[in-house]
Image 1 (cartoon, one colour):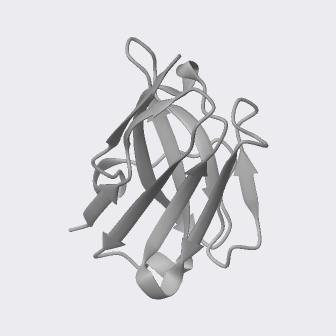
Image 2 (cartoon, rainbow, N blue to C red; image 1 turned 90 degrees about the horizontal axis):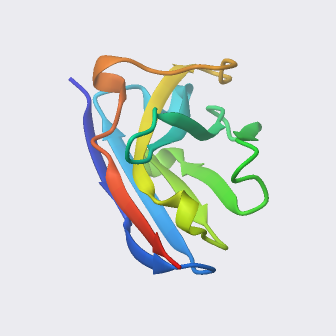
Length: 125
């Protein structure tokens, strides 16, 4: 059974920054693609960013590219999302997720235990 601990969410003003952290146990964290997704009220969950197992490859959605940075520390089984220049439209529940071993697939999404519990990010204008 996968256990997740997400933190770092909260309230920020537009133009501000937040850093999300997500730790996972019960999986081979260091060998897996890891990612972040988000779900805004009334909308479907969407991809935000992912990072390959060895951190060599990162991918971002067009809406966050240049503002958000994903990173990981395999020694701590933790993945991070640094969010800068926040906008009100970034308001959502942010979920970390575990993907396939190695490199991240295109258009991937995990199932079941491979989703974190989510952390709320609210950006005020």
